[in-house]
Length: 467
Image (cartoon, rainbow, N blue to C red):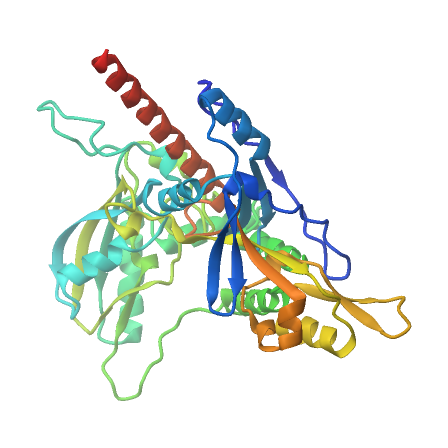
C-alpha cells in the first residue's frame, strides 16, 4: 500500500508469515499490551468478560496519536487456502477500524452485475420477475475496475447514456425442441446464427480456448488453479484443518470436469435446462479487443471474454415449444444497494486468542487436552522430569476455536488461562470470484482512505465556518 500523500494518513506494511507445521513450535507471540487497549477479554465457562487495566493517557494531539499508532500497527498475511480465500491479521487497531474494513468489503466495493432486463418473450413456467432476479445474482467474470459507473457518460440531452465503458450486454434466446434430438438440432442452428451476428456464448469461449490450447499457447486456467490448490493444501492451515481442506479440494477436483447433465425420467415430456452458458455476450465497442475469447479472464471462472463466473448455473427449465427471449444489461454498483454487487461470500473477523498454561499439564491429562479438547492448539513434549513422560505446551493459538471444552475437566480449568486480545483481529475473506480477495482488501483500504479524507475536509470546513 503506497504511502498516503497527506500527513494525516499512514502507510501500511504488509508482511507474509508462514505458519510452521504442528511438528515444530510456533514463534512466541508477545504478551498483549493491555495499556494500549485498556483491558483484555477473559474467557470463562459462561462466556467472556472484559477486565479493565490501566491504559495510556489520551494523546495530546494528532501527531502523538499517529506516532503511537505507527509503533503498534501490523498487517500480516497468514494464509491463502485457495485462490478465492485469504486469511490475514491486523494488530494495533480499534474494533471500529476492523468493523469498518469488514463492512466496506461487503457493501462498498464496486462490481458488475446484471441490473436491467428487457423481457421480450417468456412462455416458460418461471415468472419474469423471478427470472430477472436469478439473472441479477449470476456473478460475472470481469474486473469492475475496467468500467465506469453508470451516469458518467451523458447524451445530447444531458441524460445518462449506456456506452461500452459502463455497460455489458447479454442476450438469452432459447427454444425447447420436441425431444432431445430436435433440441440439439435447434441449438446447433441457433448457435451458428448467433456466431454470425457476433454474439458469444459459453460454447464459443470453450471452442476458442480449445483451439488456443491445441496450438500450445494456452493452458486452461482451471488446471493452474488445481495445481495451486494442491500445493497450498499441503501447507499447514492456520485453523489446523489440513485434513478437511484436503478432502474439500479432492471433492472439488473430482467434480470439476463432470458435466451437469440433467436426469431424464422415462415417459415424461422432454425438459430443456437453461444454464448460464446459454447467455450470449454482445460485445459493444472495443470490448471484444479488450476481453479476447482465448484469455484466462480476471476471476477464477473459465475465463475468456466477458462471461458468467460459472457456466453451469441453472436459470430455468422449458418444455417443448416454450421460449425465453430477453436482453440484460450489466452495470457497476455496490453491495449497499443490492447483495448481487457484493464481491465477497463471507468477510469476517475474530479476536486473537491468548492461551497461557499457568500449571504444568502432564501425561494422560496432557494427551487428553492435545488430542480431544483443543486439537492443533497444544502439542506434547517429552519432559526431563522422572515422574512424568510428556507435558502439554502451546504450539498454535491461531487454531483455537474458543470451544472451552477443557473447562469440563476441573484440573485443566485451573491449569489454563484463556483470553482474547482486543486489538488483534484475524480476518477471513472469501471472494465470490470476480476479484481476488487481496484485491478486495486493497480496494477496501482505498475506500476507507477516501472516507477519512472526506471527513477531514468536512472538519476543516466546519472549523473555518466557526471562525
